[in-house]
Length: 349
Ligand SMILES: [Zn+2]
Image (cartoon, rainbow, N blue to C red):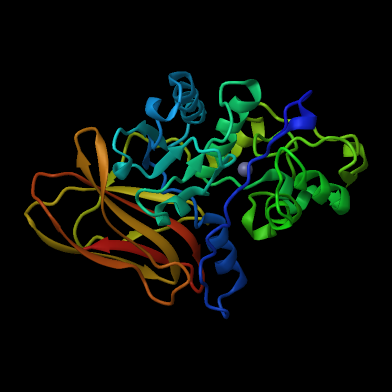
């Protein structure tokens, strides 16, 4: 992301290294692909909470915080199944935001859940209220819901003038070591990590570049304008990943085997209303990699109660949990992939 007219003094998002899931080497390609593509996405319907680690005492102005709130509102306003809520207590938040002099970056999607409780999962290293800063806010939030860098999309086919690029990024104001430039710009994502097969140079996840860094495609030799807002494709993709929730949910009965007729990345939701208080088993069946999570209704919110992700393992998901009569629960199952007969199901008993 680089603002037009600021090209000599641009600072870029520098992502920390991704968490790569440890997958069995003999896992089939479709299973691996589905895990890479969906592994860091949030369960649709999740209320993702964010909290600020720095405030007025750290020299962070209210306007800066407001602009970050605005960024979350804008993504939510695209019409997706995720919601975002500001949370005072950072220990209760999945996304923890700092304003350290450490560049701008964010972990990707649910990778945030693996970061130590007191540590930032997102940082803003420059003023988030300028036009470029506002774009940075939207870019970092994009990472936090599962987007990677668009200029690393393998379908972009960008051929860099690597000597010029490393020299440019190694100089002020970024002063990046070669490894940072490689990881954030030069390295192509695997085709398994990107949705679709096209490049969107207008994506908020794209950096702008000045002339002399890109050799091909030829029309970008003079650079790429810095995207300053969510593109149509950004909005389309995020709605595919997190479609708006349907108001109606079927109720799952004990011992009722519910077929999981889902494509990769798709999700199904059931209401669970136990008739007595007792321990219940929840399990998935069939040849499938799936993420299964049970939430408990808590006022207007759904609170995580139990879950299991069996992706990449040759067994099914299973957990036991005590449910209370009179309470309402929501079971969500998101499919990575099925194989064999393709028949998978979920049940509780
Ligand atoms: Zn980035």
